[in-house]
Length: 134
Picture 1: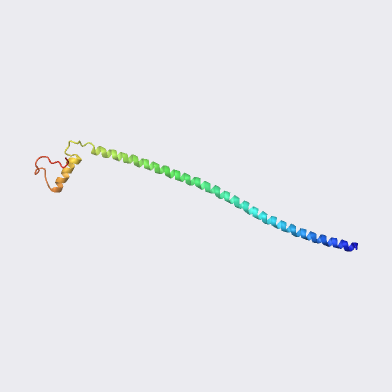
Picture 2: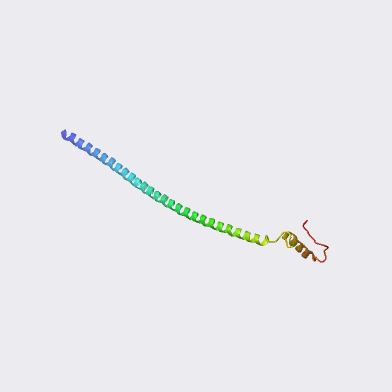
């Protein structure tokens, strides 16, 4: 009977060790799967961090290019304004020397000459000085 009891204990022990082996294998499988998931997550995190760093670097490069373009545009605008002011001053110098008493005044003599030419009238046919602007 002792043999029978020992055999049953050995048999139960083998079954328990088998179950323990099964649960250990399942736990190892889960651990391996979680390890793979952890490794994949860590690798994804590293990849995302690298992409964020690369994006930040590109943003800095883009900002630098935009700043450079803005500086160039401001420079060209300033040059254009300076050139425009220069042309305006030259234009004023050309038109300003004509005195208001002169018959060549733009609003008086120029208009008179234009109207006379358009109408085919010469100064000889008009009595006195003709002034279209009162």
